[in-house]
Length: 489
Ligand SMILES: [Zn+2]
Image 1: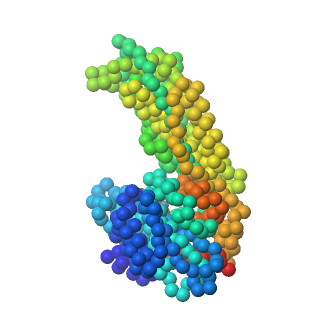
Image 2: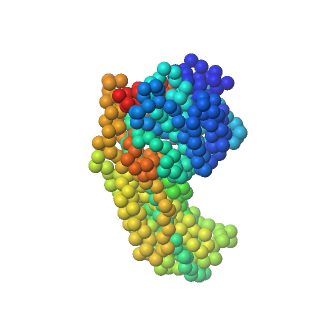
Image 3: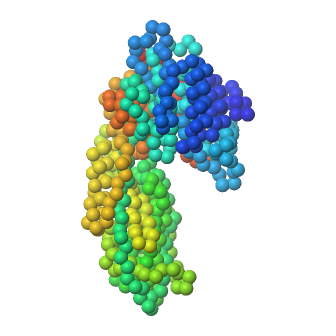
């Protein structure tokens, strides 16, 4: 069925392989079937291949006669995909293939993610291996696993797994653009041992709820300057300083790579103060709506009286402890810290105040930092650690992953730009992304390797609206062939 959908599309070899790959379930961490497919491909064509314990595979393509002494070029993609579907869609990602649909200029899936990220890259690599009469030097086809849930495949690559010093990563999604940088990341969390005090007898529980913030990805959306629901809540609690309240609960945000959309707190107050709190809430709602008119027009502040009988709080946070938490949340930075000096418009360093979680004795504040500059990443993580330490919290950081600092003097970039210009008569755009790519880790693991990343136009990646532009695939693949051929001239 999928083969029918792509019938007549160019380049044939690529679309044929993409249709086949789409039949193979390949969610992150469930890559066995696609790995078998790749190994069978190598066996069928009598190609040497190698695999490591994690599941990464490299297939070697011998150079055309007379081209043996040219430098090896590595083509790289990841074999896993994000598995998301529409609520009403029945689909078992562990068993069912992706159903392709042609919609005008686009190929999309039926209610699920498409896996063009990075299935088109995988298909392009296989198509290159199947080309006849294509003159090229030695090529390594590198397929990594589990990119989408933490870059774990690329992270475990061994030093000699690939030999090439030129690498074309096929995992970016904008026709006519070369990516030459990405950010590294690290998580920094503060752990607080909660101190309690008794609830005051005549006080009643109220829930404060901040919602309607737009949120988004903590990397690519951080430059939008959107509101952070946790910061808004903390600011509101600070503004209540003239009212005697007891904080019994606070919670906000979700994933560490998402800008928090919602946050809530439960406070105990004397009922006579309710009106004053409402007034303050309204004031803040007006101020906030002016401040975030463009970015987050839907923000809401709600105060809701809770039924004391069905509210399970036995204690409140001790006064000083509560103040410490609110001050910490207020002091923690959120958003863009600095912009790049080499690529205009690129966020170089940022931090996300991601979540606050409370479970009966421990309160944890989670944050994450990104930067394309290794030292700047460490530095902003240290800033956050310092704030936690001033508040006597225990600090934990993740290992983090390295960024890819843009090198506008790269030899590969210069050549690729020239070849692009000669082929299409226009200059490619040169960009970097404020999010993680495998390239940062590849450069870290293989010192001296020269890397650029490019791909066809894919929209809505990671969601069921994912689609890939048909013409851009043709253009991408033709350019890939020309580039591989011309780089050895
Ligand atoms: Zn990808």
